[in-house]
Length: 102
Image (cartoon, rainbow, N blue to C red):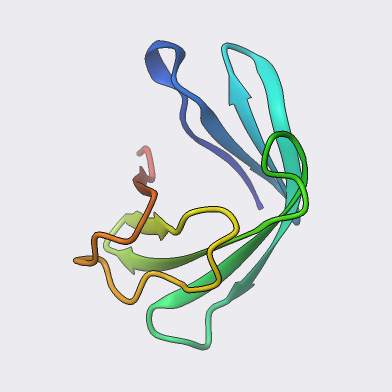
């Protein structure tokens, strides 16, 4: 699995490669970690284990769902031990959509 989300206009991008995760701003890596996905749950759940950067040592939990050709995601705040309950909840720190290009 590989991909990059966000990152336009100087905003941080989340780069996913295999089971590794990284935050990139203007081409510079600000943090790295690993992630675990559980696609047996609805919505899918994922956990980011932050290894380097300002949130090193913290977990960041989120949810994902597939809709047509897009993945919708919601990440909680790093270090908070609760996962966003659904996509309407305001407890997510970062919401994102990744769309497959045709």
